[in-house]
Length: 270
Image (cartoon, rainbow, N blue to C red; front, side):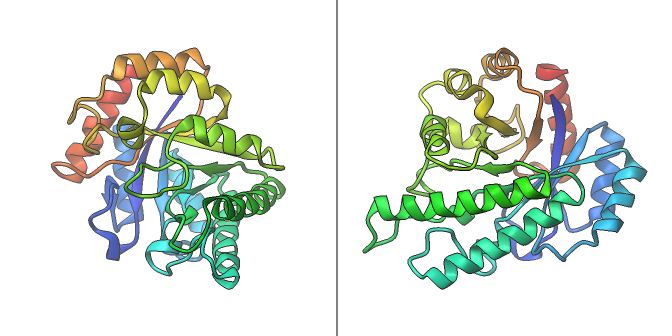
């Protein structure tokens, strides 16, 4: 397993759950100084960072790029894969394809979280799920051609009414024609939705392709009541070898949150 910390480069979302903010170079330097293996990026668009510059920084700091987020497509542009308007769905797919292409240049998968959208008023749930399936099939195949997996994230009920639990995510993946989509197990969302986080991890097994490392209140691990011992054991039981990435609030400040995260990672996975 590999340690990872988030860096957000979108000033308009300052309340979001990311450890480092605004300055890519400074964030990467600090992450490297603490001994993280990689960083996960949240950018406004696929052209917000020059990939060659990112490669140089990655090599300079001996950091991999664990993943790239796509949420700006919804936060900034209002795009989702389940919008009733086919033109909006097409724009959402195009935005995510651009993010997949950007991430693939540094070996990083793209994450679909908030851009999955919701079942909105006047739309049957089955229809919304069909739109989601169509989008994931298109994007999973596109990511495969680019040489990276696609990561899909079940979110808690307060953020989506589509897929909330890992087992529902596994069922969704089985209905896809593409086999290039993996699940993101976010410990914060799972704390709300799962009866047992370790049991859910064991049940999902190899379907898990990324993990978000945050406590029950979305502070860094150690700032809430999540029982990490059983979760870490479950991750080892399924043979997980991917990133354990801190998508958490920068509490009490980014530097302290990053240090708390790497210490917790070493305690449970080191």
